[in-house]
Image 1: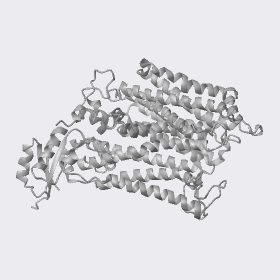
Image 2: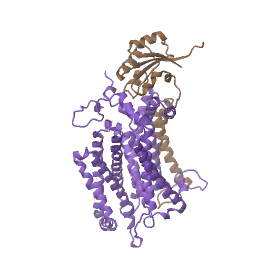
Image 3: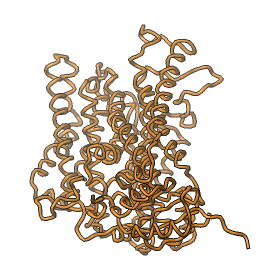
Image 4: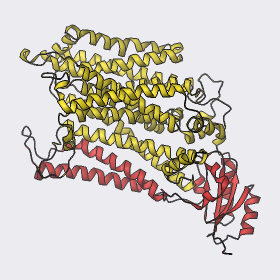
Length: 178
Length: 456
């Protein structure tokens, strides 16, 4: 029989407080590769599972700058060289009139970058994921809280990790097939 | 997040009735979509709205065949119902993003139970608004000329024109509103995916949820994105009606050419938007038994926003009248005189009644907490705001500088059919929305519960 590859060891908790505490203690115990799942955002949980590099603001900034610059340059190029029209003797490069479109383009590109950036950095859309193999994981979008230690963690030893998660008060501990 | 700890016996009504848990909140909201049988009332309501939508399509189809001659617009009133309705709908569409973005940044957590359907309402109102400029251009099959794209004619839009600013403002607003609404839905779509027993529903919600699994890393990026989007949408929502007001204010027609227009248009937009939110929320909470989530507090707060923005609108009217006199410009003075004594004076009187006089009853707390009274007052405000746009567009145009170019505006039945038809389209979309998507943000409601707090 072929051995099924393992994704990690998952434990279930019943409140945000116990989940955050468990994540902290898992990190203190020397585990590095883990994640937590909750039905709503919990303050401090990302730090507790060792996540610090959130690049969404950078992506949004770059997107907004590109939008604003391209909006302004488009208007500049059209009004001064591609299709100059004399409107009441105003200068071709009448920048105050260009501010609104520049502003709207900044918002448009910034907003789209924020959303697409969040999805891309999160690796979504992802229709299949190993954690969905756990039947009780359906409650992660309702009222249950989950912690997983990945099998790729150097400290991961199935029996030991299971015992450790049990000691944290985790329930319904199961090995997640990849 | 002091809302959670606020005593339910305090002077203010709670944001969420006590006794709820993560599970009951989830079940209550998702069951409306997943298990509640579709009532016959829903079919009747949707049917009527659908028929009105068909009427709108018929009117627009006939317009495409015959041209805008079937409408009441004629010189001097070249901007008739199409622009009145466009501005009215865009204004209504302001409440959604205001509630979602500005109240999020201001940490008004009571918004969590009304933001979702207010955002949906915004989308549908903006869709209804978007129809009008497109069919109003005369040759709607060339409406894409509004956008700057490289073309063999070698021409580009005129970027010094407020009308092109409007194209950018409204299309940006529609896009960002759609994004805001959709990303807000993703975690709830995952909930529906995991809760539904119907295989087709599971697959559709699953595709839309894009594999959301509530990972801590995902939530962290999600919250950052949501906050940034709110930060971007806040100036956007204020800019949209400002730009719409430029369509008028940059022109030199008396009654349009004033600097009060941008703030007064924005306040009017929020005023009518909240009126529409109340007109939808009051029946919805009753029919679907959501009084636990959309409490008296929400109605009270929305009424207060209406009262405040209504007073800003009143201030705008006062300044318009004052400037008519103070500017010493005879045309401005005549515009004011004409509003009060001209052929449309009853429209102006009705406007003052609907927008300024009647809503003052909202000062009375007893009326603010009476859903029926609020529903009726909101209806009055919506009528008033429509009249305001009618006064601005039609009454300003019908008497301009030369008596030789004076005229009257008579809307035809095609005008009315198109206008009433867009209301039908808006309602039909709302009916579909409450039936297939969670109308209250489930995950944001969970965060309001006391048990969501992480205790040290």
